[in-house]
Length: 195
Image: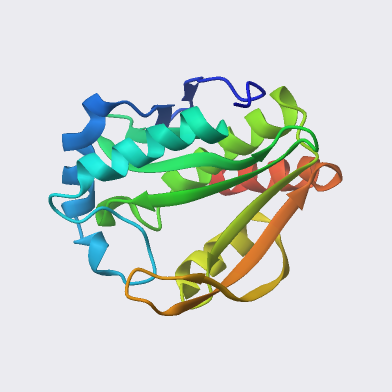
């Protein structure tokens, strides 16, 4: 189990990311219900009744693979979604930010920008990551555009990369930010937040 990444709470002006626990299950269910996010076939948001299994799987990944799942809270303290550090490669100081989803009411707001700023700052400036990846389904055009707006560059497309929930084959689009790009990406994210 990796200990490169230890549980940590990341706090910004508008969002707080705190390590996921079983006590967050009902709050995540409420966030997912805002927009019935589980109906998006190309995402992995828990459907009603599946929230416990979703949380259990995320916590098992933490123990087995050294990932760090978070719940995301807004400034009022409400849980509005989830994200995580995963695909942790301690030896090569690489990780992925993913499994990210937000309640419909906060999508396309500055909350995701601030959450990503917090995660990337921790990855590059505290953990010393040399690269941070983002991956999304080829058909998730909104996610692809959001990742590009962060300043990540597309590395490529993994064709027939995974089998989806309904047996469909998933093409995965891979993006990354490397350490030398981080200062410019950080300034761009700060500028977006100031608007």
